[in-house]
Length: 394
Ligand code: LCS
Image (cartoon, rainbow, N blue to C red; front, side, top):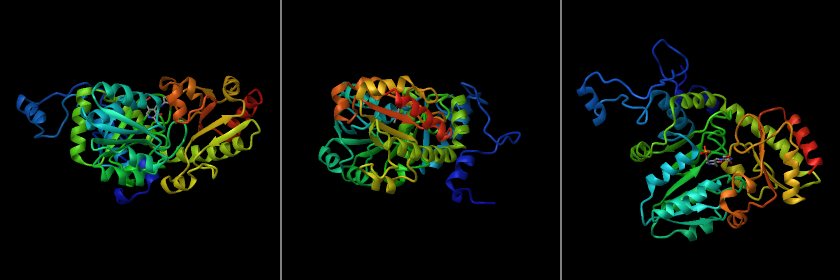
């Protein structure tokens, strides 16, 4: 029998988190229940005191959810994982677990709009100060460190600029500052980037994207590297209440089985499409970690095990040209979100990053004509044929 610890990543995707269950099913059963019966008051008391293992109430733990959490912790190379109701629930649970009034957080400018808004506006209400930095420049991160810095929050590649942050270098800065490095790994997934192995303390995801991969649910996950952090985060998640439900956990776990093969196909298609776009007369610039023209190509080569499925490009004709192209796609779909099997296209300035405001968008490098493509796993020729006819009208 192969040692399960030593199997390859694509095999782990298929087998991780799967245990032995009554009647021998090969997939974890869906324990669609809110609560669990105690054998007696003494049994209930022992569970509440943590003296016995078992389940009490599905906000506090559920076997189907736990199976999925174990799978993701294994794929990320972490200690344990916490399934959340959304990516934003994973982010807010993490920040509320790690920060107190009077603390300071450094956050990359290249992050999902609502994350920046949460850090700048909601945390400020609780007297937690923040500094936004261009984390592609490691010196800028270093300079932002203060005596009360407790968290360095990085998203790499950033949404939607696809700017990269050197995780090993920032992990060093965090360590020296006794701060926690939190990384949003949504764009890459553990198939292509493993932040904890690069020195991060926490890796989190919107599982709505590549981890689930089928655009049919909203969910998030936090991966931590030790038991103390896990216990602290579990308490916060239990109190804030943003847990994933068993059915969605089952679907994510099912999606994980094809993660490695999906990421390969996303990357395969994207490199062809990025090259096509780079040579298109109406395209001003293309940003994709798999292109040698990416300003941080050598970091991408070092930090990733594949280039991924996200491409950003700017049309020469600016906003209206972008609008025309997007209004004419037929095969690709005009929608926010990303990481599913189907190709989606969107305009960050009027959609995902609208809440940031124009000034903050500009400072984060999100131009008004930027278009973001989440490349699906369809045949690349169908995607290119559709882009070709849409770009003719741009
Ligand atoms: N982190 C990243 C990198 C994201 O792209 C998103 C959502 C989130 C966190 C939040 O996750 P959620 O709560 O939606 O599961 N990104 C979206 C996007 O780019 N378009 O629509 C949602």
